[in-house]
Amino acid sequence: MVSLTYRHILLVVILLLPALSFAQKVYDGQVINKITEDWIPNVNVLLLKEKIGTATNAQGYFELSSEKPLPDDTLQFSSVGYKTIKLPVSAYQSQMFIALEASNTRLNEVDITNKRKLKNIVLDKFGYADLKPVSARFYHHSTEVVKTTTVLAKLFKAPKDNVLLLNISLGRQDLPTSPSYSVRNKFTTFLLHIMTQDSLTHAPGKIIFTKTISLTDNALWVNIDLTNDKVRIPSKDFFIAIEWLINPYNEIIEVNRAPKVAKTTKRGFQLLNDVSEYHISYQPFLIGYDNEDDTRVHALLYTRINNQWQLDRQIYKNELALSATIQY
Image (tube, rainbow, N blue to C red; front, side, top):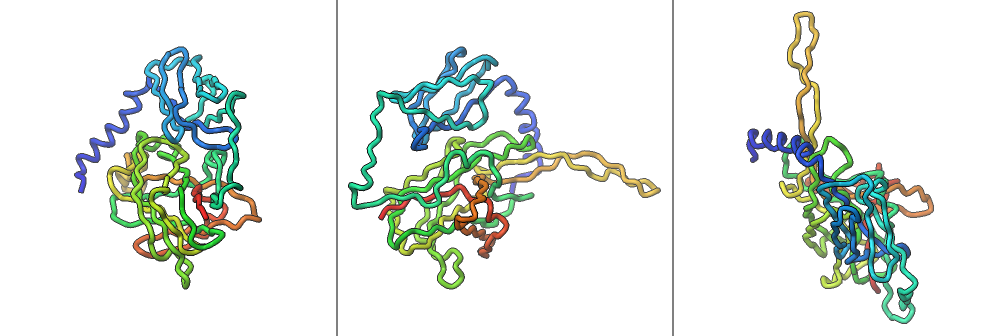
């Protein structure tokens, strides 16, 4: 149990952090292929006037901190086989997607799907354009630290039984875009479950695979590679579930001002004072995007709180940014 004194000190530090880092500017985002929307690793990202740079990681994510930001500086993105892009920092937006176009010297990718006996397909595919703007967020929220289990499960329908699960993609945010929230926390850990569908209730059933996922950057678009895990799905209908871990590692603290009755006069008037209050939310913040296509069957979303599964009927227009690549 965290002491009250520690909490007060933590809140003071959080409130002071913006003032201590006012001069620093952080540029981050993901670089993808304009046509395939695949992540591009090892892209050189430079601030031309400040003369500092970095490179994208395996998921195309970059983060570049500028100690002396210049309003007329330019971000440059370059990689072998792609056309270089220059972006004025005045046009930069937080957690941008940068789409690079293949150059003429880059060989066109050959589609060999028809030459293979095995077929790969993506279930509930989404693109980078679906991740912004965000229409809904799914996360664990509490006004106090409580040890409840919260799980969000999405139903998938494969074309046949006994398919192999290759990877999972999901959209997430490091924190909601609100000034009342504390500093960014790029470190997130949660549990990934693959579950069968209960034949009687049609809710999530038996867990057939569980993996601990740890994220170490602020990438919006996350790929979870399961090729080495050899996960076989026994039936066509299955669930992919995210379980929040309630621990300080995943905490995001929201600080607000709220009125509190300081005194009541003899005539019954209340004198109010503004006081600070905080709520704790737990990562990951999963992304829901608008899906107004009535011809598409929306995947069912279930939530489990304290071992009770509930079908959430209020978010049927918000598609959870969660997809699965299978092979058969």
